Length: 522
Image (cartoon, rainbow, N blue to C red; front, side, top):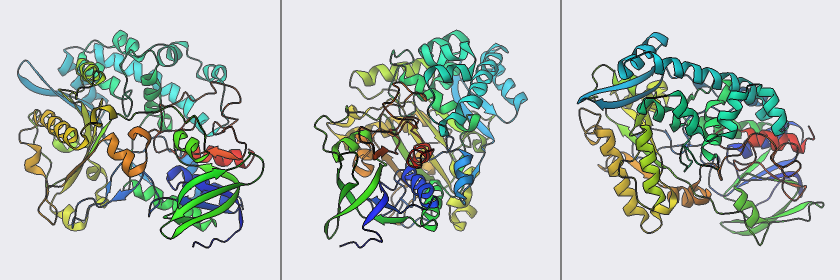
């Protein structure tokens, strides 16, 4: 049975994903005894790099893949050996109009972006609307992002801090579809704006719950700019750096330890029961931080009414190519088109149709998705031979594919959806994407797809939901319910430090930071 360094720890952390590691590093640096218990044989959770293709020297960010919400403060505070790189192009969206291939390029300088808008729409109007809209969200981002690592503001406090009633109304009070339709006329431009509201979120542009607004908000505030950056070395470089920082500060990390129960009255130290390959064991923590979903937390605590079920809604596809495919739109270099976010079937009407079909239980007939090429910005994830031969990675993220669509036949639905998604990509290519795929050591094409049910099985994401549950507003909905830092539970000595905390979601480390601050009494 496992032998630990202490009989009673100041802090036991359940789950060694990136948020748990952030909390561990902060708490250990404060001189506290810290133990991290991780079910899998490695730390990192969804923020890992792996070699998914047999015999191929390519380390892909298998699940989460871009960085925006990680505060530079956390990197500085913990002295992390980690960096990100900017993408020179924000996005490229191909489209065929009047029988001719074209597209919208955002990036490469203001003049080039302006010209691309004008060529697509026939006037300057859409570009001016684009500048005004993202100018407003950019100013909001500069005010909201710093609050993520501060004590949780009230709704009124955040509204006063933003000090822009138009921005507040369009993002916090009215369905985002209204702002999009009021400000933009072109269907393709509308769709590009809306996509940030739908990543991992199954909602319509006019959903009354405003789930799409919350998703959009988190996608445009990162770093105070809304930029989505490429992690150098892949996403695993971040979690490896976090694990190293935690260990260097004195934290113990035990992998292969699955936590089964947490027993506490909220006052006395909590008893944590875990299972390993050799049997069960127990450890005591004065405070327990849970880097798992709210639903998993309820189960660990033995609550008779677990958290409401949640549902993920994305298809994740990883590919390794021998070369980038040629485009039908010859005005754009494939290295630019795939270096940013390559939008596929994400016009406004196409997104609405895909949502409507999925809501009735049907796989979208025209599946929307987006792609980017990590290795164009950061070739270090590929072995030297692959780089020399011109190999590239592609990461595809499909939208509007809720878990319910895969419940009867996960494998069959996955294959149908993947085929349909690649067909939509092929419609804009001068050659099939399958002709560009690399092959592994066994002669199989280097492509893998993950549905929400796959993510639930592999990572225990509830319903395959990448945010553990719908994203929250970054303010206190109910004073006292989540505590000063948004990480509280009904038990004073049990805190939620995962993506399901208030201000959780994405690769941010924010819930881990905030849980540590709560423990330290900040």
